[in-house]
Length: 455
Image 1 (tube, helix red, strand yellow):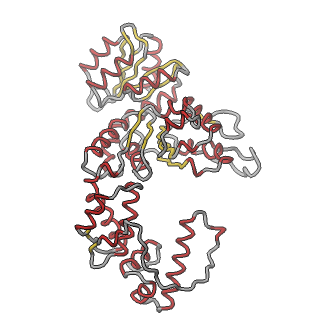
Image 2 (cartoon, rainbow, N blue to C red; image 1 turned 120 degrees about the vertical axis):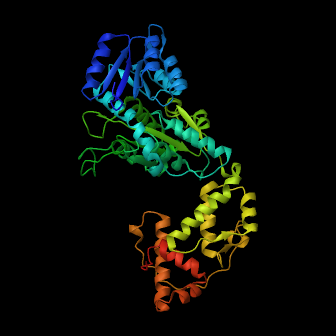
């Protein structure tokens, strides 16, 4: 066997199935070995190196899940997928919990098989690219080290992952890390906030629609599942999905197919689903606000993100990183935290977690003087700051074109700054003084709002 030849091991006690799979994979340029039992499979695995493994669950000398567990212990880098009877999702989930890379239903659809094999074989390439594409999870505490290990482990699987954590802990960051460290790194990562989609548009958003399928459908529309094909779909705040949509989502995940509104047939999809919510999903199930079968399906593997108050020793490192980023964005030197400010951050409980830390430091960055952030700059107590001199502005912002409150406030801020600059004949120092803010804060806002034309 050549070292650069891609090789796959097929384990099934039915010769006809082994032959069909061998023919299919050989047409993909893949070299195959076959085994009809767990014993012979172990013997081959101990002698040769394989890039992927496919096994039936019912074998003459044991359960295929036992082989999955053995591979996990002896050859943890080897992706192993299992064959299951059509519709037997309980078995498929049990196999993935045991460490299976993925599952494929019998009778085998060759297109699904090719897709599964390609994803498995891309894992080695993904490991090489992960360092460049995967977002960093900063910290040295035990909690964050454990989280990084979990991400590395689940990234090698195609099992659905449920990411649990309080608001602001970085659930989307974890989802992106799983995607970019896995075999789908070259595919799309599509995040969607389930709570932000109007109920009447949900089916169209997720599954797409055909032109003329309902009033206003003036063209074909691609759904989120189709957009994520070959990659990962991240369902943030999944607990906010209405019950009727949960039923449709469950079917799409189980059948690996979607039917756009108005279409006469289903479309096969190859998507890994990651989900998250800040709510207690098990409690939502008990209160009958979330379907138990969907919870069981998306919660094959669960990852819990520790809140910031449980990793306080990471605060200095996180703070340094945020301040360096803020400074880089506006071409300034990064300020440092005073001893009092750092001590206060360590004592603070951070109900908003890492997102709140970022917001606190961004505000402090714009307020601080002499490149040192003081305790007062942090404003942790929520105390009032002196009001800036009022500048009369004629608000001409077109609210019909604004899609969010943040966007609206940003437009007003731009208008205030531009009017002030005009009054000071574009003297930035004078404009900052007139607005009652530091020059650092003023320059940072210019950069953030895209009003700074200087290099």
